[in-house]
Amino acid sequence: MKKNTQMTMEEKLNAVRAGVLGSNDGILTVVGVIFSVGAATTNQFTIMVAAVADLFACALSMASGEYASVSAQSDSEKVVVAREKDRLAQNPDAVANDISQFFVNRGVTKQTAAAIATDLMQKAPLETILQCKYNIKLGHYVSPVEAAFSSLFSAAAGGVFPLVAMWLSPLPLKYPMTILATVVAVGLTGWLSARLGHGLPGRAIIRNIVLGLITIAIHFGIGTFF
Image 1 (cartoon, one colour):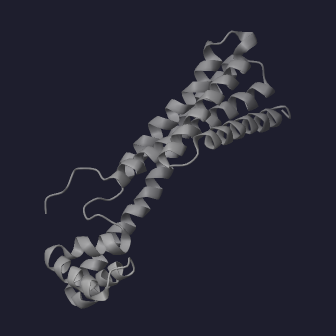
Image 2 (cartoon, helix red, strand yellow; image 1 turned 60 degrees about the horizontal axis):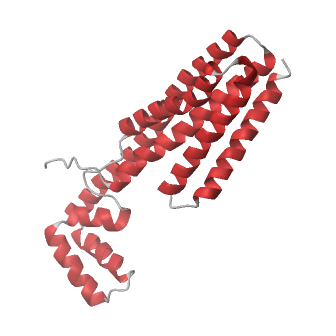
Image 3 (cartoon, one colour; image 1 turned 180 degrees about the vertical axis):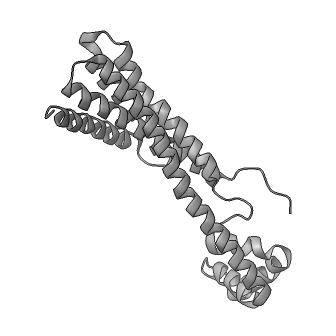
C-alpha cells in the first residue's frame, strides 16, 4: 500500500502543540536559572554559563520526553490497527455491527445505518472501523521524531528570549529587561496555545504571565539562601 505523505490536521497540531509547550518550558527554565544563580552570585560569567547550560539541557530533555511520550501513543495506534485487521479477518460481522452502531449513535435509523455499514465494509472496511471507533486515519500516525524536533528547537528558541535580554542589556537593566523579555515570550506562547486550543487568548496570556512571574520569584527566593 502506498504511504500517504500528506499530514492530517491532527498530525500538524501535534507538532505545533509540542512546539508551544517546549517554548514555554525553555523560557521558564532559563529565566529560573538566571534569577536563582543571579540571587546567589553577582558574577555575570557564572550566571551566563549556567543559563546557557540550562538552555541546552532543557531542549534535550524536552525532546527526549516528547519522543518517549509520542512513541508510546504511536505504538498504541499501531496495535489498534493490527487488532482491527485480525477482527476483520476472523469476525467481519462484528466489525460491521460496530460501524452500524456508530451511525445509530449519531441519530441514523438502524436500517440506514446497516446499509451504510454494508457499503463501507465493501469499500474500505479497515479505514472505516479505525475512523469510527478510534478516530484514527489509516497510515497517519503521530510522529515522535517530528514532535521531538519541534520540542527541541522551540525550547531552545524560547529560552533565547531571557538569555539574550540578560546578555545584551547594560548592567543596571539586566534583570528588568530579562523580566520584560520573559513576560513578552510567555505571553506569546499563551496566545498561541489559546489559538490552537480554541480557548480564550486574553485569559491564557494573563495566566502565562502570572506563572512566569511566580517562577521568577520562586527561583530568586531559592537563590537568596545560597
